[in-house]
Length: 274
Image (tube, rainbow, N blue to C red; front, side):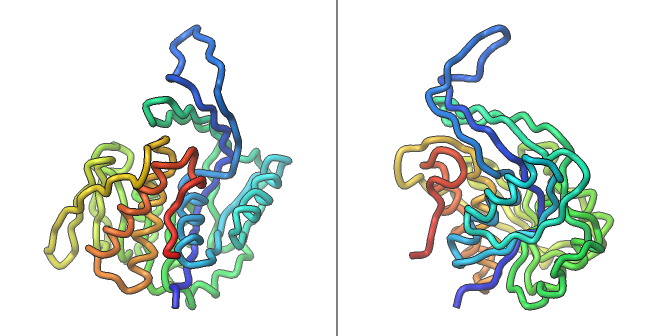
């Protein structure tokens, strides 16, 4: 049976434009394609988990404006079970260039919203979940998420991880992004995973084991990099929730990231176990 999975995190309403290159100052470009969807680390990981497990619950907070309600409907349209609370603020949004070199360039606008552990959400249900991935929320939300069997967290939320004081089964960061470099967390997480983009990455466990994983070639022509890292996180979280070894879970994560690279935007191509 597939593990029962959830994501606790944030969401942006993201507008995408496909362009030959990111415009320089004063330049005018015409986009060959443009579209908009709910995206960011929370939804992209959640949809990847959905495509692996068959269903996924997303705990989040949204702006109580027209765009926030549009975002909620967009999340449901993606197939997620949404548990959200609306805040008296504008919905966070972003604009992303997808260029012919396959890179994504992102501008984010607005406050990063995450759910609160004291908000009226079905937190108690998480005790029956096999795995939860955490990207945003207050320390109380992370403590509520800890009721799940496995909890994986993004190092981008390191301030919350440091304050919450709960043991995490894994944390995911980047050795190439100053905002995601690992700093000691108490209690120490079971595994620290540091990605290196298309070069794979490294991991270290609290029992002294270390290792690397190699990148997986995309199963088709690369399109763009948006969502690859978050799809990787979804594969890793699913694998650990399903009882895989860290090596097996990392391999699944690498496959998920490679498949996502062949689609335009985050959701066109994501790995399934079908």
